[in-house]
Image (tube, rainbow, N blue to C red):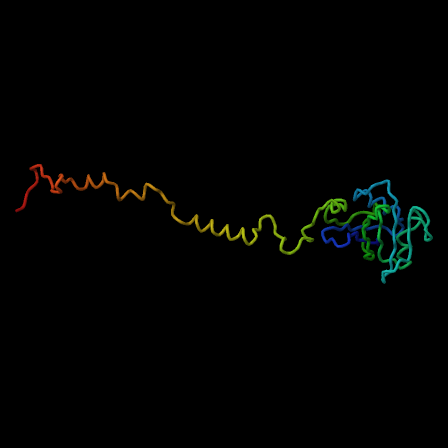
Length: 205
């Protein structure tokens, strides 16, 4: 059995990382894996602020002993035994940059590296800091997939489709029936409007 933890960002639905780890994994090892996976800066002070089910702070674990032990000596099993259900993990204490880590219980795991990522969603936290907005975080009126036209585009699309079904207009077709030359060929009249006979026709009186 291994422990499962979900890493999230406050107020952002388009991001998470799901980790599994053995109970004897230290918080420092967990920190190093998250730092590598999410490309956190390596030269910043870190801190795990541990919370119980009621949201109360029960411990703080850092690179220096803050009264509950250091991250390289405390295991995840010890925090579970203490009643810790979540952490606010500050990967940059100076600039107060953090992610939330929630304990989701024991699951069937695989042998090997601990911890390891089981599932991911979204880019790294720094991309959200730089203005990236996930589809899930967009307002409902802006949630259009690239292939989905909005209401105005849909109206224009229908108008274009309707116009494409109409017969094409050809200016030459408009004058076809009113061509003066055709009239002259059809009616071979003299200047007075009388028909001209060349003598070969059979006249009826």
